[in-house]
Image (tube, rainbow, N blue to C red):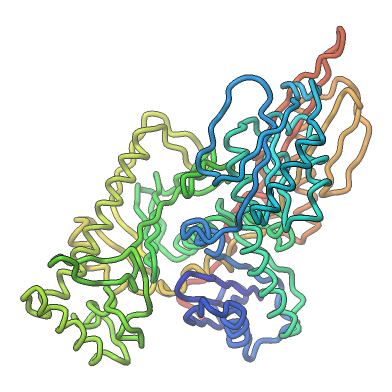
Length: 555
């Protein structure tokens, strides 16, 4: 049995899946003042009547890291940069605690000069005085020689909650992206750590020892310990679960499509080219930060079923703020959900109170209540259409990448729309009218994210390092440390990495018939000493993300 849980900004959803069938499901509102009890109550209710020893694994998707960045609820980060000679990049979006140190390493990883210890000591004092919580340390060529980052981290470790070292983020050579990704990793560390500890405590209280995995932005998974070490990998975990859920639930269609996940706070958009998800090859951009985080292409708009509806200066405004649940479901502020209830497209316990509030607001602009309710929904759908059009314009302005390949000279032209989320069914006819194309919503659309989290196949990642100067090859994840000759090259390293990640997957119990491997990153650079050039080779490989079997319409 697999447990899937999606921790959204509005609701926490859960499913228990046994042999491809949903055997139990729940949806509960999130109490933002008490995340632990939201999680614990979800797990308790979800596991009622379930044998705990039958739980094979627990898979989670969460918006906690994403929301922390978008809402600027992040730790105060200090950034230490060893830029070295050459182009001086500017990082204006890293707050005020950015410090430079002397010293440098060349592109081969050879130290040119070392940092001054007094500089690090002064930076430490400045950070402590400015109440910095976490630190990111990044050298320009640290992937080829991380000694500076390691020395700085060791010196600062006892004074700050988290030290992120740039060389641990990615093996790729892109200093600006490494800085931004390291900054975000340090920024969300505390938020994600609290979330992870709440999960662990809830499972401990329920006596559950099954392994826990978190969805990554590319639809793969990472174990909870790995996510705590590198929480930046969990950014856009929620949208990844959305796409995995839609892939499982919607009818297969090998055309261009737009997919929508309409939540309580936001709506996430995805696109398919010939039925294959569009991918962000270089890494996602979030909150103005370009990162190394590999991801399925998605974008969000601050519109959801619980978006705050009001009249400002005689004009109707919707979102992007969410103040509460809909009045129809016990909240205090009018929302698009209340409009759907008034129009008879949804049923709710407090429909009478909701109607009273909507009718009073309609009077402010001298509109009939039903006309006003339709104005709300039409404006909602128009905003989504405009976001789709603007996003397509941005995607089609550059080469289109999917999770399979680069589509040269290709533009995406959606022929239909798939939609999930609580209001999906109620909104579908209005979206169809606005978008002027067929709109499909699947069974279980209201818990699709939790289904996507449950069905995402476990993935494993390994990192192979080969140094022909020292004649050493290592794969820490599988315990490989062995000798190589000076003729070892990138081709051999890739082949070995794929074999090692396959072995790691089989060790985890991933069935060989669904086990597909891929190279995520690969680089080889020369280290010249005298008349001889040796190689430093890095290869990252993983089990490809995918979906477990799912039987539609069965319980």
